[in-house]
Structures are given as structure tokens and as C-alpha cells.
Image (cartoon, rainbow over all chains, first blue to last red; front, side, top):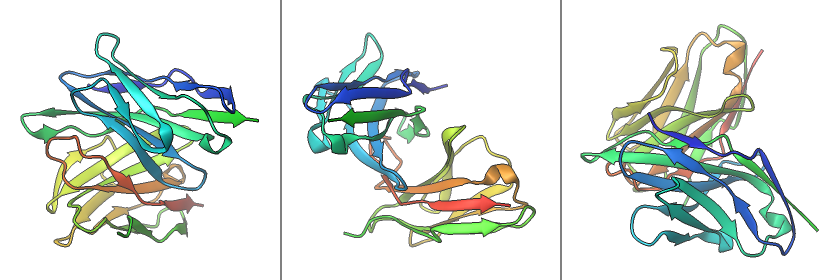
Length: 116
Length: 115
């Protein structure tokens, strides 16, 4: 069975400081990893994904994520946080075996609070 | 390009009734997935359709069902509603489910309240 863990319910950071939102995963096979963001009363928005290749993935709004196979992690990062980044962030994983994809499994979400 | 649309946006139903939610994917997207989001359980996968066939299914009772039409539009139905079915139901579309690397694009959701 595949699973995703987001160990922090909430991350607090001051505007202008770097931010990290943690994600670890467990799968059988090669993972496809995704980050999504959800603003209040909205659906989820895709930020970035890792499929293969370069371990550092760049996405929307200045976000990036680093894939670490040995630590089975895919942490989301941003060099300088903005108040407007405050939202709920979800990590998700999927695997593909013989061309048939498994379901997309989400973590429990991490609330990011950026303050002035 | 228009995003994923879901109708209705809000719905209030009584316990025991049934409900049908609709989802129109992004043009050209052939895969549609449904999720239930609640404060207690988070995001739970319901099912995924591709080319009118259910490809993946989550761990929900048979009261939850869905279908996909030839134009890729999808509906999900919940029969015999229970109070615990109150949730935000999210639909997401992607180009395909094969391979697994396609990102999903989410609609705004349907907020279902069961009284």
C-alpha cells in the first residue's frame, strides 16, 4: 500500500524567510510525487511534480521541491515566503506498474501561516 | 482554456435522500477523479474514470457510485445519504490516467450538507 506523511499540521514562518513543508512517502515501485495548494473555499491547485530525472523540481509561484530517494522525502521549499503563500499544502504520491497507475494518495495537509 | 467545473456548488439534503453531483473536465482531458474532503478524514479518493471505465476505486461503501460519459463529463451519486456524508466533494481531471505522471486539475468542489 502507498502512503504519504506530512508530519507538521502547521508551519509558521515570517515573510521574507525561507520555508519548508515536509513530506515523506512509502510506495512499492517508483513514485510520482506532487504538491498541491488549497486556498480557503477553493479546490486544489497544482504546484509541481517529480517524475524522474533532476531531484530538484521547480514549480509555480517560486516553489521548488527536492526528491530524496534514500530518505523517501519530497519536501516543498521556497527561498522567501510571502503572506499570500498562507494556505493548506498537500503532498501526493502515485505509482505506475506496467502502465496502469495506482490511485493518487494525499497526505493530511500542512497549513502554512506566513506573518509580517 | 476553461477549468474544471462542478455543479451544483452547494447542496443541502436530508438523511436518506440521494444526490447526484456533476463534473465537466478541462477540454481534452479524458480522466476524471473524485475525492471527498472532510476536516476529520482529509482528502479521500473515491474513484477514477478514463474512457467511460472505472480504473481505480477507493474504500467507500457501495452507496457511492459514479460514471463517465463519452464526452468525458462525469457524475457521482450518493444514495441513502448519511450525516457523515457531509463534505466537500472535489472533482479533478487530467489528460490520462495511464502512466500516472499527469497532474490533476481540480474543480472548486460541491459542498454537500446532510441534515
